Amino acid sequence: MAIDVEQVKRWRLILGASSQEKLGSCCTGLELSAEQLEMDQALAAIYDETEDASDNQRGKRGAGLGGSAPRLAKWLGDIRTYFKEDVVCIIQQDAIEKKGLKQLLFEPETLKTIQPNVQLVGTLMSLGGQIPERTKETARMVVQSVVDQIKLQLEQQIRQAVMGAINRRQHTPLPNANSIDWKWTIGRNLKNYQPKLETIVPERVYFYSRAERTNSWTVIVDMDQSGSMADSVVYGAIMGSIFASLPALKTHVIAFDTEVVDLTEKCGDDPVNMLFGVQLGGGTDINKSVAYCQKFIEDPTKTLFIMITDLFEGGNQTQLVRRLEEMVGNGVKCICLLALADHGKPMFDETLAKKLASIGIPCFACNPSRMPELLERALRGQLDSSMSTTAFQ
Image (cartoon, rainbow, N blue to C red):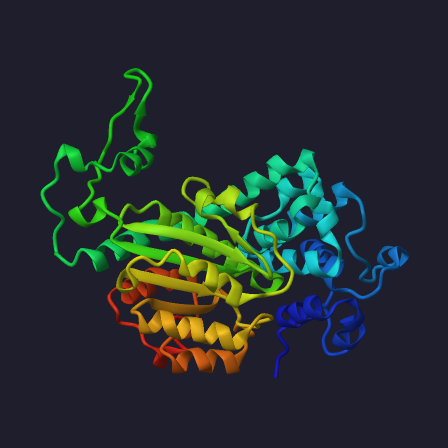
């Protein structure tokens, strides 16, 4: 059977220079091209064990990213050149975790060259107050680009889902000037600004329905900001800011570890500012946060409580279950998102998840793209605890 040399070369790139001799004995012509050698060096910087720079000069895989910002910039350029975007994100995250890239994120020049993604935002959030002043504006731009991308994907869908659930009529009432949604109309038509006229000429005007003009529902987003929940906090904060922009919802966004932080005032206009208000890490006291959130419940039958946590409770678990059971009994629609992220199966406290399912609270991971559907079904009362741990993957 003929050997596919190109396939063997791909295995050589995966396994590294140490496999060259053995793979070379299987077939001839295994020498890597110039482009493949650059790919090999880019992978070696992250995935090789040795850190002897002299090895690299002898043609062996060598060594880490080192402390040179120019060298790092070249490496970042190489991985974007030779790998697809989803692979680039994985390699960058491995670089942060395996090779101490965090310190290099403090340099604005380096941060500008990195592919923005949710994992990078989580890393910047975890660094918190360590980011020096010279880098803060660049960090904010990176976070803003990710926030804008996610909002572009989800905002209109969530808006339609909310109004579809709250206002069950097929058509919006006839529009009139008093019901124009000025904020949404202006924001969606900024691209149509006419310099000569010094005004915006809208392609479309957006109107509130009758249901939109009042806070018909209360939505409480209660986010676990422990380190393991970084991606979920990013999505949760952006989701909270979208909720806050909808007049039909009275929105509260809370973050907690062993303390409770109310982010509601920050979420309305600037989710980036809210994200920088989150402090990842620390312990977990879910019970304390739920007790805080209970005071925002005015009409239980029109309250949606979204708890984003892996349920590893460090506080009073018995009291937590009792509080949540009381909320469900009063008519509050409660959901526990074990993860709000687009990859991987979450680690969570299965025992506590089963307890919550038994009192009528579905517990499951949710891909962000499924969030609009989840929200609409929750507001319509179409979720139940039998969906726990399996739905909305």
